[in-house]
Length: 199
Image 1 (cartoon, rainbow, N blue to C red):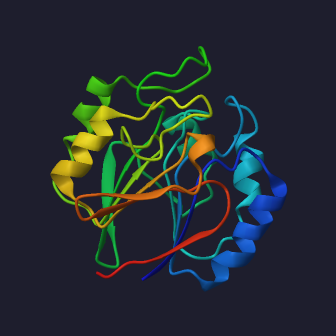
Image 2 (tube, rainbow, N blue to C red; image 1 turned 90 degrees about the vertical axis):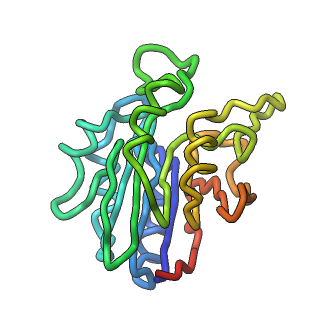
């Protein structure tokens, strides 16, 4: 299965147009959160992505809540947050929001590591784990050199060992690729990233 994945669109119209154009070659498109900015403009961001014809799976970032994303997403789009699904035999599980809690203030949709653990414990197995926040120590380094990823996400990856983890959130680490055990970690960013997944 050929998958196009991205994160952190933040209403960049040119990036959205590139993703829509690229999506014609995808069997599945996955978005790992932050389509709008500070809870504003989500419907417009979804409109920018409305030309994607492939199946589309989205999780919320910290810039939009799960409820807001469900309400704004076009018909037929799958929204995951503390939940999973199987699509053509591919097992997906998603967890959105900033983990651990960000310093950004009241607008940011965040979870503590313990809250994230409760939601991630619902997942026994997955081929792809879609998370907004990267696992601690992997694709989570800020421009100041701080590791700000999630211990809960890292622990879940070690337990579940999916083929892939798709994340975003830490802009300074866009493009990061690494591994935890047999799992490949990708901090995506808003450009089209391509993955081939065996089912």
